[in-house]
Every structure is written in C-alpha cells, then in structure tokens.
Length: 407
Ligand SMILES: Cc1cc2nc3c(=O)[nH]c(=O)nc-3n(C[C@H](O)[C@H](O)[C@H](O)COP(=O)(O)OP(=O)(O)OC[C@H]3O[C@@H](n4cnc5c(N)ncnc54)[C@H](O)[C@@H]3O)c2cc1C
Image (tube, rainbow, N blue to C red; front, side, top):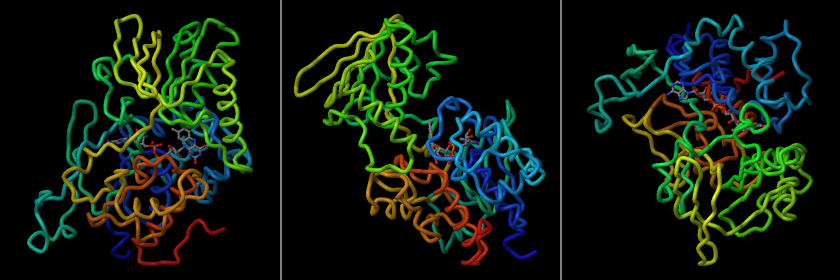
C-alpha cells in the first residue's frame, strides 16, 4: 500500500458525483467514507419527475457500468427521468459490493476544520497540510467528530436557492413569506397537481428550470383551463431561452423551443413579461401580491401561487473555517472559477472543467467537485464531473496518465 492509498478520504454528499468519486477511490484502494445527509441521490428524488436532457451514456461512467454487470442497464442513448436514473443506476451503484459498506446516509456534515489549527492560523507556524481534517457530523440527535486526510465536498447547490428580488437580494417581504414560495422544480403534473390546478401563478426566472415549470403549467392548463401563469423575467429578451443552433441535446432544444413559443405567442394560458424586476411581495395566507418594476413603471400582480426558479448557490458554511479562496462572482473555488470564466458562456456542452491543476484549492487536500465546484454557474454537466474525478485522482496519486475510465 503506498502513502496515498493509506490516507483516509471522506466524501461529503452521495449525489452522482460523490458516488462516482467513491467508486474511483475504492478501485485505487483508498480508505473511503461517504457521508450523506439524506438518502443516496437525495435531491434527485425531489426533481426526479424531470427528464434528463443528456443520454444515459453521458450520465454514467465505464467504472459504474462495470460494477453493475448483473443489472439490465439502459442503452447509452436512452433519455431517462431523474427517478429512472436513480432507480436503474445510482441506487444499485450505492448498494454494489464496492460501495455499500462505505456510505453513511442520514448523516450530515455540519462543519469542517483542521485539527488544532484555526482559519486565521498561517503556515509556517501552522503547517496546515500536516493537520488532519475534523468533521462535525450529525445523525439524528447525535453529534460526533470524524477525521480525514483528504476531503471531497460534493454537496451540490440544489438546497440553497437564490433570492428573487432586484439585484439578487430578497425582495421586500420575501424573507417573511419564503416558506410559501416554491424555489424548486415542483412535480406539477404529479404530486403537486392539486396545488396548482386552476390557480393563478406568478413564475419568476428565465433559465431551463423556469422553462420547465412554464411548460408543465401550460400542460396542466389544458385539463384545468382556469390555471393562469404570469411569467416574469429580468432580462429584456422577448424569448426567454437562448436556443443553441443545431443543439446536439435535442431534449434541451425541444424545451427551449416550447418555452419560447409559450412566451412569444401568449397561448397555453401563459403570459410572459420581460425586463421585469421584483421589488416587493406580500402573502396574506391566501394569495400573493407581487410588486414589480418594468421600464420605470410599477405593476402589481395578484396570484394564488408564487414560483421562483431563479437558480441556486453554494452553501459556504461547511468550509467556512478552512482557508479557501473563492471567486468573487461565482463563489466557486478560485482556480476552477477563473478557468470557467475564460470560457464562452451559454452552452454547458462546450464548458470544460480545466484539468487537474484547477482542482487544487488554497486548503491542501480539500477539493470541491460536482455542481458546487461550478459555484453559481449553471453550466455543470455530469460528464464534466466525471472528468474532474479522473483528474483529481491523477493528481492525488501523482500519476498524470492514470485514467480508470479508459476503455
Ligand atoms: C432539474 C435538473 C436537471 C438536470 N439535468 C441534467 C442533465 O440532463 N444532464 C446533466 O449532465 N446534468 C443535469 N443537471 C445538473 C447536474 O448534473 C445535477 O445537478 C447533479 O445532481 C449534480 O451532482 P452532484 O453530485 O454534484 O450534486 P447533487 O446531486 O446536488 O448531490 C449533492 C448531495 O449532497 C448531499 N448533501 C448536501 N449537503 C450535505 C451535508 N452537509 N452533509 C452530507 N450530505 C450533504 C445532498 O443531500 C445530495 O445528495 C440537472 C440539474 C437539475 C437540478
């Protein structure tokens, strides 16, 4: 066993990237523990009614598929829903012989530090890389400490929504009414159907999440014509989604085209208003009153429901006591963020994670992988996460050519 293999590696988060990182590490002989505050692929279970726009072949790895040879796996070109992907790939992977002993579910990592070394303690007096990480864990009512030599933060961003007010801070009244606002991708045609059917809805946002919600509400309106959607977006474009010419991800383009159509034509019980900022919200236990401004003009909208699909951001509390240089714009780790900021915005297919060097943070042996590593950018794809995993272990083992994904 070499020095790397004898080191203890803790992965925080059993989403798809945490799981694949654990599998890779196990193959290399690392001592691995994965802590997951909910169930495996916890967030996927809440938005799993949505169909993925990348095919199964892009959402799984050669290592993962090899681990599951006794299962009938989907074909590479299959477009699964999130639930199907969990059921047919992520859950079996988590219970496979390589991973089942190292995953601790219902165990949250609350905060991480260095043993005997505070955030403000600097080398050379405090050689941080010689101190182990201390992780404060909570399982039910019980708290305990674990230690690690290497930590991978794979906790994602989905639980931490952004605010819907002008400039990204809460609109006046938003904090008081946030428990009544949906910031997520509700299952509008399934479990949340009765909540939305026949209701007036204000929808805020202009990305793929808002587009998905607009399309689902429009479908609901076909069977419940009283359903009415006022869709508000900050940008001035009269078509909310930018379509990518000849988009190879057909499902993504279909969504953009359908949402733009709804916005432009005003049919499907959806009316779209561009160039609109939200200033204030009131909720009176029955309905919302939303005050907006557009071209200097104030408007007031009354609605039964309010959905804010305005994006997500990293929760920084986990590593607040570590020394991590974060990007001023995205809150991703600086080197990776700088590499991503240089790349053209827009199409996640063309964004590349940037190689092993940009994975290093200013805290030795602490790495932020997966969607959290991209900070507030929404261009993360599972495929990029798999590249990060391969690059990370090449870095950790000191073997630049190491690639367990090579077929
Ligand atoms: C609706 C939607 C559709 C998407 N579609 C695609 C697609 O088609 N193709 C694609 O490539 N990408 C897609 N993505 C983007 C991306 O691939 C996913 O967001 C993916 O889930 C990111 O994986 P992850 O492992 O980084 O994080 P997550 O899946 O967010 O997993 C993080 C895990 O960490 C756990 N956790 C969080 N905090 C703690 C803590 N303190 N302690 C312990 N555990 C913790 C969570 O419970 C969760 O299980 C989509 C994203 C969304 C939201």
